[in-house]
Length: 70
Image (cartoon, rainbow, N blue to C red; front, side):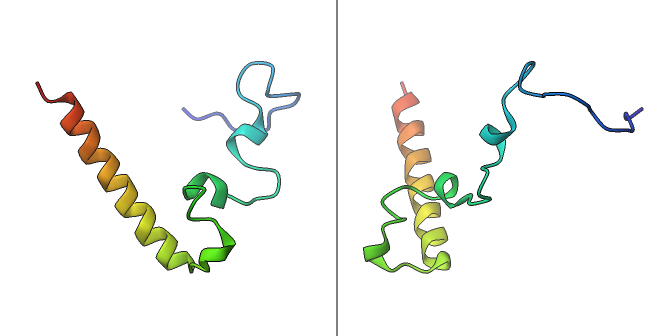
């Protein structure tokens, strides 16, 4: 059965501080995209950044698989 109610007191005593889970400024772009994709000089739209980040993740996955082959 799920607990119902609120938790009182600091949560970072027993686990990760809340700001490690959710940034204080609500900007999750830093954790979503590689830092090179966030360069303002590139003038990438969010859709372009998503597409490029997906390609980066796919390539990293392929490299990990190739690394682990005998």
